[in-house]
Structures are given as C-alpha cells and as structure tokens.
Image (cartoon, rainbow, N blue to C red; front, side, top):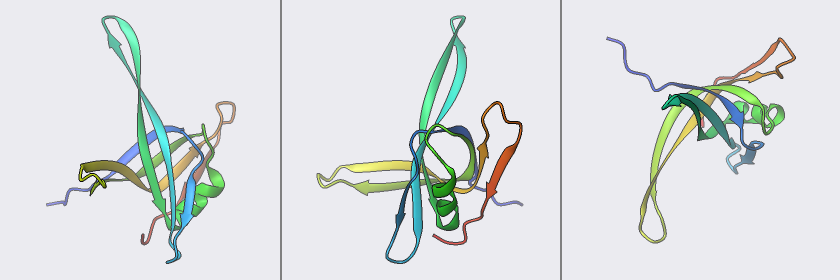
Length: 125
C-alpha cells in the first residue's frame, strides 16, 4: 500500500517580491504571497474569486527565488501544505497554513513562447 503524500501545486501571480531572510545558522528563507483565481457561474453570471496563499521556501530554492521572482509574475509552484498553530500574547490560539515550496516554474510573458524552469529540491530547512 502506498503512503499518502502531502503535495500541492498552484498557478498564480506574486503579490510582492519575495522577502528573504538569512538566519544565524546560515539557512535562508524566502516568503511571499501568491494570488490564485477561480471563475464560476452564479445565476448565469460569471464570478471570479481570488485566494491568497502564503509561500515559504528554504535554502537554494529561496536564493533562486530572490534572484528570479518579481511582483506580478505568473508562476507555477509545487510543494506541501504546512499547518502551524501558536498563541498570541493575549492567550488567543491562532492557526496558519502555508505552502512550503520545493520546485517552481516561471511562466514568461504571453508574447513569449518559452518557459523558464527553475527546479531545485530542498535538502533541509
């Protein structure tokens, strides 16, 4: 029997340039948001719904994202969903979900017919 895998793929646009932080341990983290859109018909009228996703990437993937990605670009991401919870200073419990990316693909402008693939597996965090 195959084990279930946590895997997610998204196609969307960057909401901002990646923010990159290098920690004292030498690990690098890139963080940004991506907007995805869904279209559906409601009472015969097309509607569009935008979802925002928080994206994290570590190591060499983060470094490549810093050099490659810019606000507004359309990209394809592959990674896994990560759920975390924490407690605020006021004692409120909060939950967050983000996509931890291990591969990405930059889609070129519509007038260009090529794709630029930037693939890098994360080895550690």
